[in-house]
Length: 330
Image (cartoon, rainbow, N blue to C red):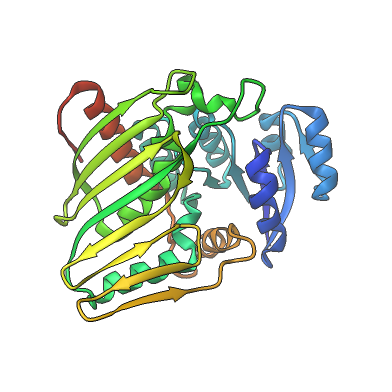
């Protein structure tokens, strides 16, 4: 049984993470941490958590945990992950992994040195439709993968009194929709195309307050030769979350990456496939992590994948700021 603690227990943890941990047959939610004592007490009662802390250090010092889920603002991901790893705890981190690739690399190195499991919560990858699309591409049935495109966008309706308003503060978030929304799609690109070679991007702030972008356009050339384009926006309404996969013998349209259908277009026919969604969309994420922790099967969402995504994001911001194509160094 994996005994979990969650730090940064807020909206995401309450809606997705805690229910998934409680539903997982080899997991139990042992402790939660949040600075607001009133909300902390409320969540502890709601999820029947035996231990609740307003101090992350106190939660770690109390012991009795095997793994920590880090759901705090992005600027806390690296320090809170490293603190847990130093205490011998496995860590599953919310996306984006860190403020920048330097932090992400330090997290991966620390986990490797300690022999601990580090995972990143790119749960979109584990939706049945996205798993099936990857299997289809890897089978070679559609020929060679040539290009990818994704839209990940929506309006930004948060007001300064919203607890999640930190997302428009660069010091806490590291960036806008490219970090928040785009990281999910870049992870799917990584699963299909591999590691990136060159990145070019534009970014701007058109409609939102704060000091992060609300509009970003990214082009990525992968080492495999695949080219990809991504739009990540907080400046449009209604939202979009689609992506396309273009191959030499067909192409795939996924109208919503968190949905249940995709369409395969071949030279002689088109087929729309519908797959059931998970009742708890974070349950496969928890299962993937626990299996990796116990050394059973492939770890689909390891820290190394989060690091690759972060390298692309860093390169995109550098390209937008400097007006040049950025070649990734390894």
